[in-house]
Image (tube, rainbow over all chains, first blue to last red; front, top):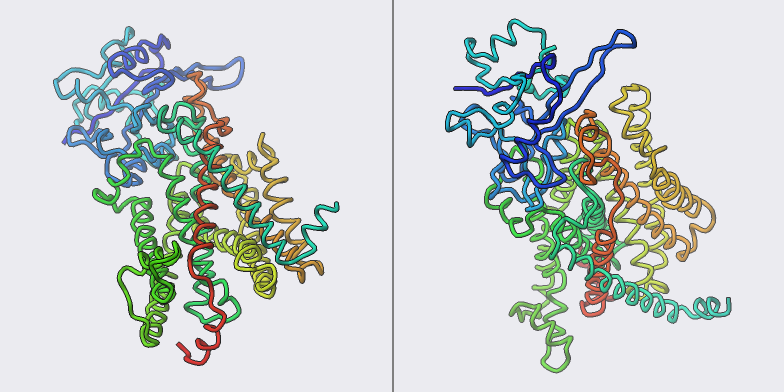
Length: 179
Length: 429
């Protein structure tokens, strides 16, 4: 069973926001809402500083507060790659998952259901890469199976220094940033 | 001044005037509420100010407030029907009916907050029992059924004896009696036994479902402001305080309360004071634990409460009007005057709404991670929240609806029968 995850190289990322635009276009994300976004973090103290550009989105956590709090089971873990998805037809829009997500990854679509990054599962199931990964001009984003030791993402994680976002939230996020 | 003097000169007149004020306010609120309802139905959530960060706003605060009132007044009514507390017997029916009306108000408030109002039934048909919300919804559905059945058996005898085909009241009673025509004393006794059993079963259900509302917030690990083991208990205590306080006010206005419920109002005032002090102890301990630990994520929500842009809700509304003033009223000799005690009840009930707002909004307005809000500029992604006009008006509309429903029920439904008190104490049900 695959366990999809993402590795993003913050050394290569230039923060062009192509991933943001690609996601908006591919998934028809309404105005005022985003499934992914760019955050720039400055680490260290002047003059010894580094800039980390993070392309953030749903972390498709292993331990999912958003799935366990959903009263109807609309929020669920998909069979393919353990991707966390929302069944739009089932969702009642109670917003419990929006409140439960420590990464602010979810929002209520103007049509009334909870929405968020799907890892472009509709593309991945056809063998394509997620839209954000496929458009990245610096090739700084990698998508693959974290359980497969021979996948590109696993090799990168084994060879490069990396960190997930806010591991202390205890959700075991599956997006890692190379630093 | 003369007008006020005249208002207060005659007890029956006072009662009558208070009722007129009540009907007036209720009708006005219901009317302005229609604007909010129209916006909600035609524009969805677009005109509401909650967004992706503060995702629960005024309507959720109103929901936990109303459902707290319901649980609180039900538990007060259980003192009569379970523990046979004779002093409150006159307001027993009033308390159960208040519980039903406030429950309906709560359900309306949370219904409009749903993204898909038409799918509310999904929770009943496709429940996920890992979710505290699903538990809560099942529990309060059982509670609502129980309330309806309890009210039926509480009033059945009066419905049957009062039913006729001439007056509107008689026709209504005939309808409400659901075909029952048994006027015997045995049936009256049987009803009392059923009510006692239902009320007894209701106590754990009321505690569970309101504790469940607290747990729904308490389990959200991403929100340190809510993530506390005290939360379910704090919710229950606040429910008892607000329910008791509201009943203090109601029993002084309704059912000739101004002249006949004096003792009850004063007694309720004492009870509410004790509960309020206990509630303060719990709230203070939440603050002390947070600030002694000093973990930024934990204290951030409390910082917002006591020094954020809406600190006046805490200091002015919840603290001064809702806590200090009523405590002073209930401690000073004014505690012996039902008029003052009723005022204190009103202030406490209003103050607890501030407490509910201070639970829901600061918990969400503090971000765990400063990502999204620094990346995107949109009013949907803004930790700063103030309810929009349509949100306020819809909430007012729900309050108006509740007031009118309560007023109608109080007017039409059978009230406490004075002779019953003696017969009950003799028969020892």
